[in-house]
Length: 115
Image 1 (spheres, rainbow, N blue to C red):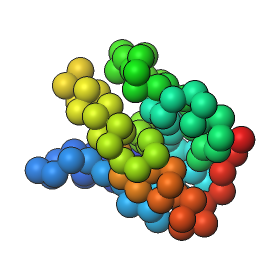
Image 2 (image 1 turned 90 degrees about the horizontal axis):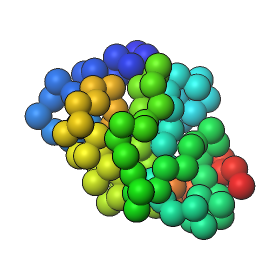
Image 3 (image 1 turned 90 degrees about the vertical axis):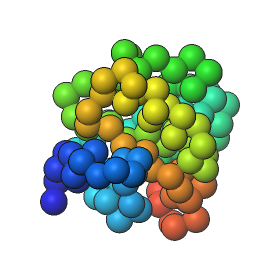
């Protein structure tokens, strides 16, 4: 299943669109989505999921999200990315999901980190 179809399926459910770790691994490996890290710049600089762009929640603007591929939002532990997800959905974004384990969960599961 592609990341785009996974996100479309998630948006059709009544729950908050969230991506599981295995699907996140595939997304990172394939480059099939934009990964947006909403942590502050000093947190991002200390280590982030490979390929992630830094768009801090403190200045987050859903209108400035990257286009062309589905977006997965990530923070440290899921709280800020959930906030950014709600803002994005309210602004009309369709192909967007949260990665609730965050960078901390990514690291704990052995995911690679870029500096």
